[in-house]
Image (cartoon, rainbow, N blue to C red; front, side, top):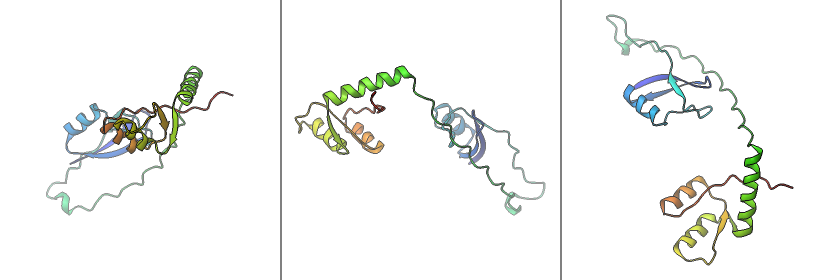
Length: 154
């Protein structure tokens, strides 16, 4: 195992362990290495001093180096505002969904399964589902989509 000090494009420092340098390269290229503070996938290794034991001394006999306290993570920046054209589009989408579909609330996952199995007469539904419920529905072959739910215009 190898320990890397890492830094994201926004300047957040963090660390992680990898099987070897090839594992870091493969995971980074695949987008699996991300900043725990801001979620950026623009992550690079920081310059590190190698841990080489002094001549005649093994690492196991050396006292562990003192660990500096990690700085408090910077507060996450708020997401950028949604452009007005996108808000207007999402308001139209919400209005059409509310006109054409039945609201089933937190029963969405079970109602979607009933529709998928042909056990329900409804033609379209909308409601709330956890990430786990949505993923389970997809695994079962039920088509679901998440839509940002913006407030309707007054």
